[in-house]
Image (cartoon, rainbow, N blue to C red; front, top):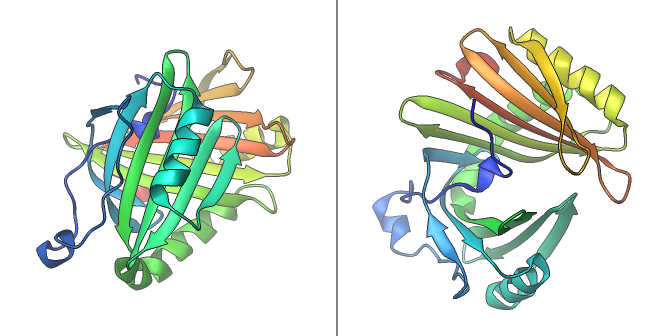
Length: 234
C-alpha cells in the first residue's frame, strides 16, 4: 500500500449534495500560493457527505493558518493535533473546515464544506459507528476525524483519534481493533518525528496506523485503511 504523509488531504471532489443545495453552498477561498489537486470520490467526513478540495503551498503553516482565519471570518474554532491544525466555522447552514499539515516540501491542506441539515439526518448512524470504534480503544479516546472515500472501486477509511494514553497502550488497542476485523500485524517502523508505524494486512484489506504523543503529551492515533469494501468495518 502506498502511503503519504497526509493521505486525508489528497482530495478535490465534485459536490455530493442535491442540486438545489449546491447553488447556495459557500466556497472556501484558497491563498494565491496554493496549488489544488484532486483524488478520490464519495467523501463522507464525520458522517456527513462533503465537497472537498486538496491543495499544497510553500507558505509556512503559521502563515496559512493566519490567512484562513481571516478568510473564514469570526468566530473560528481551532484545534491542534500534533502537527495538524484544523479550523472550522458554521456559515449559512453549512460547516466549513480547513485542515493543514506541515511536510517536507511545504504544507498540504484540505478544505471541506458540508450541509448541517444533512448532518442532523445522518447523526444517529454515525454516532453508533463511532461508539463501536471507541469501545475498543483506551478509555477517554476522542474521535477527532472520521473520513470515508472511494477511488476506482477501492474504499479508504481515515481516522484521527486522541486521548491521554501512551504509545504502548494505544498500539496494543489499535492492533486488537485490526485483529477483530481479520487484519494481522505485519511489521513496524518509525517516522522521522519518532511516531510508531504499524502495518496490517488481511481479509482483502490493508492498513497503516501512526501512533505518537503530541507536544501536549496527548496520545494521537492516525489510521488509514484501504479495502474493496468497508461494510465489515462499519
